[in-house]
Amino acid sequence: ISVVICAYTLERWGALVAAIESVRRQGHPAHEIIVVSDHNDDLLNAVRARFPALTALANTGPRGIAGGRNSGVAVAGGAIVAFLD
Image 1 (cartoon, rainbow, N blue to C red):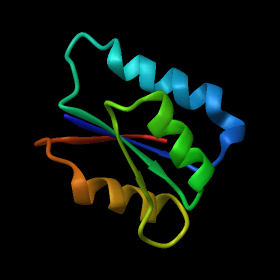
Image 2 (cartoon, rainbow, N blue to C red):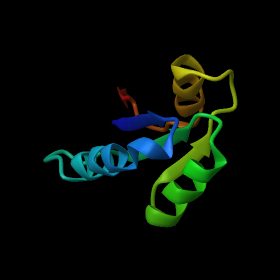
Image 3 (cartoon, one colour):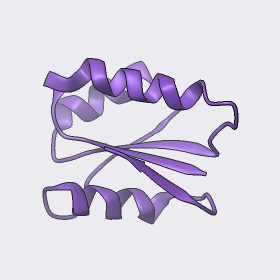
């Protein structure tokens, strides 16, 4: 399972960290965790600094959840993709 977490603001940093840690604690480990930053370089840099083992990338599509999800799916390697947003 590839888990894609879409985020857009540092104001929700605590919730993002909690979501990532929750995925890491699951009984069945994810193949990968992908965090997509929705056109926010500060957020992207913060994720990369705090979680260097994760895949953190910028939304390459239009702003919003659809663009973020599509950016995450484009790099996902798991047979199943689960979204947390």
